[in-house]
Length: 187
Image 1 (cartoon, rainbow, N blue to C red):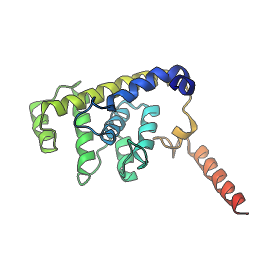
Image 2 (cartoon, rainbow, N blue to C red):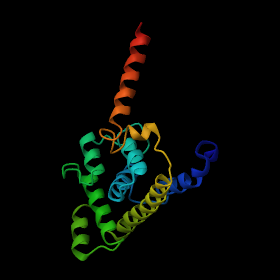
Image 3 (cartoon, helix red, strand yellow):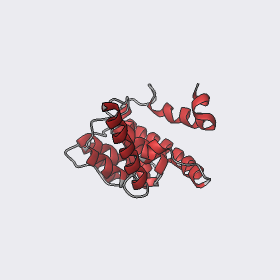
Image 4 (spheres, rainbow, N blue to C red):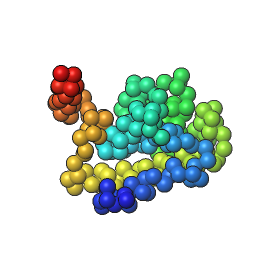
């Protein structure tokens, strides 16, 4: 089924789905993984992955979505941290950044800091490492594919980090077309 929909990309999508499949993660929920994946994709500047994960985070009806404010999603997309009042997202992005900084090795002070954010066991840090590592590998593949000419799908362009700059004209045209369709249906 996947190969019918995604063609040559099917094996990559299958691998991508595995990290969040039970029992792969004991402490990270699917929405948690989505936050980590978005933070890693922002760090690696993978437009395709970041666009997808931003879109999923902004869709509370998605199994991996959230009710995270748009401002927080954009903050992650720009490489920042959600505010501390959104404690879980703030903690997950912080942990992902530490994991990436030293390739999965946490300094003693980072472990102490992460413990105050809820990451109190070695296993919880291993899960962060696994999630950041898998996403960083996927970022490398997709960035290579984009460099080799893979075009970003329109729906991802409208959700991604360049939606208001590189793709602004296309976004405005899509909004205009949607408004015209609604107006035509009302007649």
